[in-house]
Length: 170
Image (tube, helix red, strand yellow):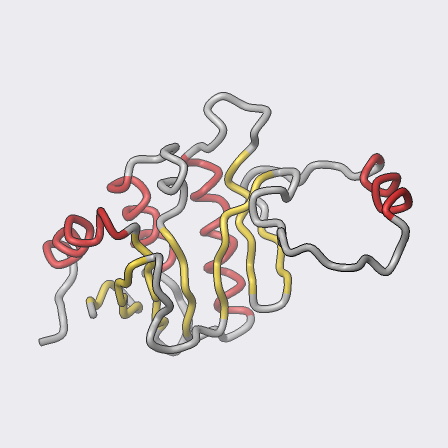
C-alpha cells in the first residue's frame, strides 16, 4: 500500500475483487445513466410500455454530478452527446463532490477506478493526479482507504508512479 495525504492506497487489477469489501464503490456513469445500467434480464414489476413511456420524460444528468444508489456512488463524467465525451473538469468536479460525501458520511474505505481511462478519454497520469488531489487530500478525521482498480495492462506502470510519488509500506 501507499500513503498519500490522509489516504492509504491499495492497487488491484480491475478484473479482480479487492481483498476487503469497501464501504462504497465509485462507478463511472454518463448523463443518461446507460453505462452503469444493470444488464441482467428480469421480470419487470410494471408493463414495458409504461416503463418506456416514463423514459420519455427523463432528463439527462449534468456532467460532474454524483448519484448515490446505495453503496454505489456514480460519478457522471461522460456525456455521449459531447466531443470529447469525457472531460478532466467533469471528473474533477465529481471527485470533489465524492470527497465532500466521504466526510459527510464518515466513509473510511472506497473502491474507485482511475476516472476516464477505461474508454480512453483521459490519460492515466492525469486521472491518477485527480485521485491524489481530490480524494487523497480528504479532510476526514480518520484515514481513508482507497482500493484503486487499475486495468491489468497498466498495473505495473501505475504502481511504479504511485511508488515514486507516495511512500509505500514495507
